[in-house]
Length: 156
Image (cartoon, rainbow, N blue to C red; front, side):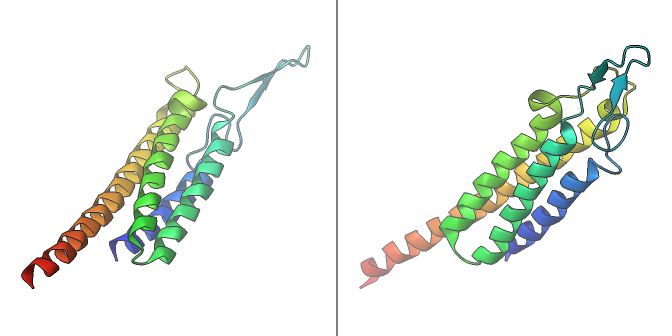
């Protein structure tokens, strides 16, 4: 049951991560990033944060698929443990998108630095913790089951 709740949470957070960076958590200039063009020479300079929406879209879709897998897996402990670990890895990737994978603009006043970066870090931490909880709960349930099965023959 807890895996299904975390699965629904993953789908919701995946949607926020995927869609949020293109709407209310947008990077500098809004949408998929802004190109700073020189009006005289036509030289364009891509903003450092311009890859964040695409990377976040991919991470959000992957997280939604993991959430769907948790809902469908039901009581399959090994699958739930594996999906929990994948959840943790996806959470670390979401944290990494604005920090060390893609990065954001250096200016402290930029929207991507003030809003997008902290939001993705917080969402990534929530995703990673939720995955760790699923993996730990399913692993402890499998340990309890194994110990109860081992104790049964001793009682005979």
